[in-house]
Length: 122
Image (cartoon, rainbow, N blue to C red):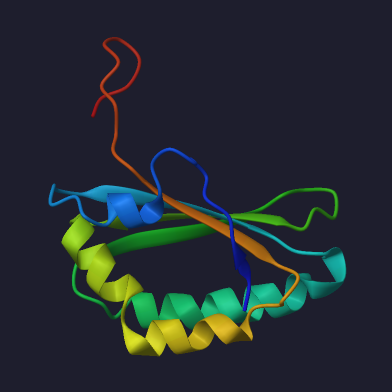
């Protein structure tokens, strides 16, 4: 099982899961030793196969740091916090967490787009 590390110590993922608003983006960073990168990738792939079948799932994209980095970043879009919460607490997903390397860390956090006039739209 990987170690969970909060991205924001003042607003935890558990706090965010109480939100009842609309669409959200999950940003989840994974850090693994280079020797464990293949195992992490296999575990993430199995997780993604579960998540893509869940109601409210829109899309996902996994990125890996370059030059042999063991840092991965997952960007996933969900229709609502409620949909993500249901998927995150799904027993099939939870059972797969033990497939990740014990040395890995994960840091999931939910975001919403910000409207910055002239630069980006929410």
